[in-house]
Image (cartoon, rainbow, N blue to C red; front, top):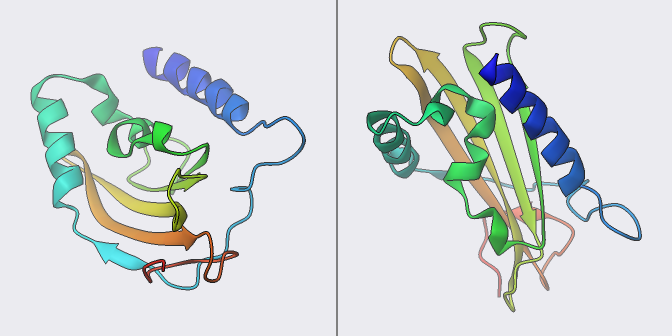
Length: 147
């Protein structure tokens, strides 16, 4: 019951986050030229620590976005979540796109997390990242550093 309530609140929250006065969010469409694979260790450590502390969000992979990245660092963000099954899913993908950084070269980034459920709960099996620059190739996300 609590999970259903949290999921409903998350949907309402995410719908509100995507609304911007004057039109659609710049994160609504994104194009990735190339991804950079990242180590899963940092995210595994976050999950392990939260699990030891008894935090319940570790059982809801759709909530991981709020604990893995600093969402307030961006003017806009979008979170897409998909699962292999509606009920009792064992494989999920979490895509977090952030845009509007207060940085002179990096405009935003995209992180894609592949999450797998096992006997001990959820684990991050893969993470990849792409960044979006203000100047060079501004319409695309890529693994290349901004200049």
